[in-house]
Image 1 (cartoon, rainbow, N blue to C red):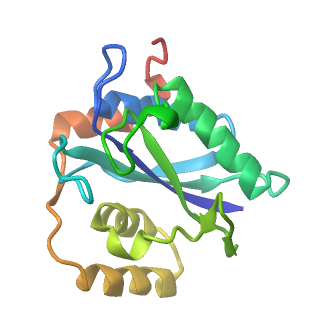
Image 2: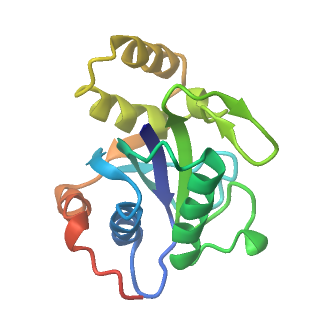
Length: 182
């Protein structure tokens, strides 16, 4: 089943910068996500809590086993986040974090529970998800999804989403060689 994940980071962890952490996250996600395609990395001004460093964001598109329930997928994602220093009990909501991985879309699934909502409830208001998502959806045959994303993006103010410099793109695109030692 196709999965689209939003990834973000704005804090270093154990000597690794945000782009390195995104690369490591993709490598760890590859344990249970196959056929991975990743967007470029974008530097983004923070939303909601403005007094923090800029984020580095990307979108991952891949496939997960249909045997993996949405909540089991979320648990695996939380394990990846925890391995990269995320401690939800100590963070400010929408505040700084070493890594944040959101399930934006999972097949055609729609669900709304206390723990998980799919599609992601704030996808329409996040240019830092829509811009990289449109980049990797250009490979997709689903024009309806691309058009929806374009409309949502056109309704948003400029949120300061800028493609990161080439050296960061290179670091991120080589995720298969990421050094996972922390």
